Length: 248
Image 1: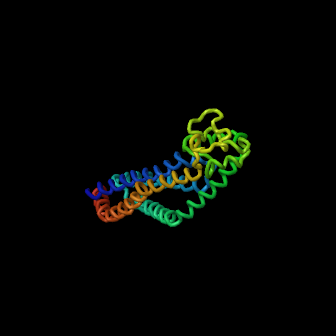
Image 2: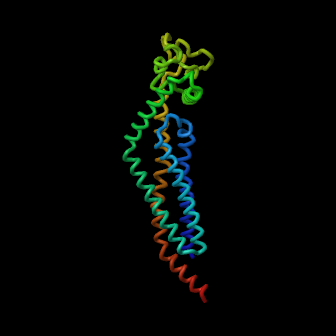
């Protein structure tokens, strides 16, 4: 009976780690992907959506496995264990691939966002969505322009002399006008660009989630699978014994 309860505990822990996997995707979705969607490449949606889907799948299969362990249902137990092996294998392969290609992916993200952001600055003041997006990003992330505040001087906005009011340290109507004439613009506006600010923020959150959530969960999954398979023989013996008792 101890093996049955241990097997149940393994699946329950697996379900909890599945929630943690989904959490990494949901965190990035809420913090960046949905927020910056016009500037992000499609593969960012795939990565975040994949993490959330993987987490849901692990939780669902683990819950079914826990029920199958206590039912008992040996076929369902084997089926759930096999599915978890496939899911964890996919998780490890993706993790290894992401780690190996992280510099290339970071550069690709930087290049893609740079192009999208430069294009959207040209529509600032004319397009409502671009204007609102830039004002929101610059206000909340304390940044101005793409690379720096001077990017606004090359746009149609403000006749090449001004920056949006959302760049100002103390935002008020007209505070960004004729900032090009300022001796020290940093006294009045934020001079750091939004692209490096966003890339840095994404990198910090990525490293934090990887170090504190994703990698520990991957290691835990390998350990849990090892325990799960070590319990397969004792559980089979229990199932066979129970089957004989029920058949009498």
